[in-house]
Amino acid sequence: MLKNKHILLVVAGGIAAFKALDLIRRLRERGAEVTPVLTTSAEEFVTPLSISALSGNKVYRDLFDLTAEAEMGHIELSRAADLIVVAPATANIMAKMAQGLCDDLASTLLLATDKRVMVAPSMNVRMWEHAATQRNVATLKNDGVLFVGPNEGDMACGEYGPGRMAEPLEIVDAIERAFQTGPLSGKRILVTSGPTHEPIDPVRYIANRSSGAQGTAIAQALNALGAEVVFVTGPADIAPPSGVEVRKVQTAGEMLAEVEDALPCDAAIFAAAVADWHIDGASASKIKKQAGALPTLKFAENPDILAKVSKMGKGRPGLVIGFAAETDDVIAHAQAKRDRKGCDWIVANDVSPETGIMGGAENAVTVISDAGIDPWPRMTKKQVAVRLAQNIAKALEG
Ligand code: CTP
Image (cartoon, rainbow, N blue to C red; front, side, top):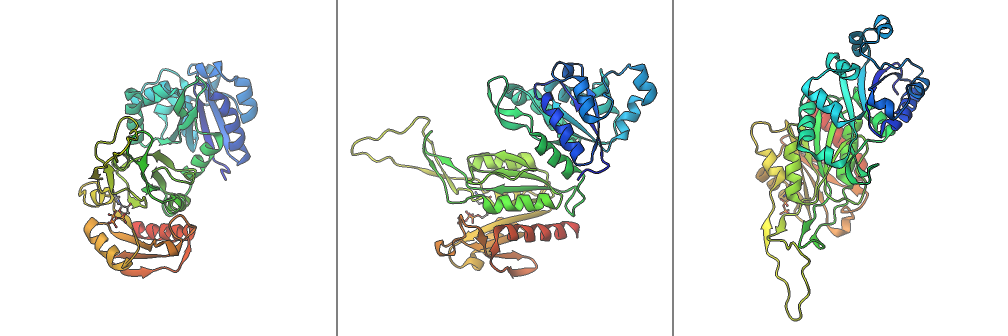
């Protein structure tokens, strides 16, 4: 619920501005008060009248509007809100924010505010991927600006890729989370999840049976306790949780790159079933069948992401948790793995086919840490996730 929360909604000029109308409705349904600000170009996409009617508030548009200034000056406007949300956030307004430019009401409010700011980017995929935009994104994240989306999908311009604005309900979720005061609020936690796919050629790959269920449940449970979660996932069977920052990868190499990019974090949980090897010299074109000749695959070792992060010294997350999926001598192997990789806790489980754990809904884990060996009863993966999230909250608090 967003009862009595005051949101200053800056609508910039992108095709997704029409979704701002639905966003206003959803926010008001949850009890929020919405004060809208339109940029000049936003008025090409939505009318001030429709925005005003839905918000039940005056629409602010002009930095030099004498009446508006007399009623509530722009500095006061920028401070009266509990949160400023920019949706859609165009490449232009993000560039202005990153540079501290203030040549209209919206950008001036964003520079003058002392409140948190959340952006929901929306732009063409090439504009999103452009080095300049990515530089601005990094600057804004570093400044503490919260991000929701963009999502991947079909675009109004006919192209496909990341750049679609997050849906209104996803933005509402992110706003609710920004106001959450759970035990993990203010903590940034990284979770890896799912299998990795290591290509043999453009159509074939090496994979494993991980469904991503345990990692997804952990990300969800951490998010429910108020954490900001970065979810780095291989191609999993189940959809990533909502309300977390999702980074999709295919290979172990890509997973390492996203993990390094997501740091620094307060804690990191490595639930992914990372392939130990990739194919050395994977073929760039489809390998053709040849009579009497079998292809030979040459393996090369993948980076051990957990070990790398555990041993990184400066910038290491305060709590690093690994998983040990074993089929025999579970505890002994897990203890050795914890020592070898250098993580703080290791969550060991028996993934022999008869346990039904790999790909199933339940898990039976033993958590090994400096405090000793703690066997948990068999329970659902969701329950394991909730208990683990609670233990993480306690550890980060202490
Ligand atoms: N892990 C990782 N990067 C790898 C391999 C594993 O980050 N290249 C992480 C997993 O996410 C998990 C832990 O290390 O948290 C243990 O993974 P597991 O596959 O059980 O261990 P391996 O090192 O692969 O050992 P083995 O396969 O020999 O049991």
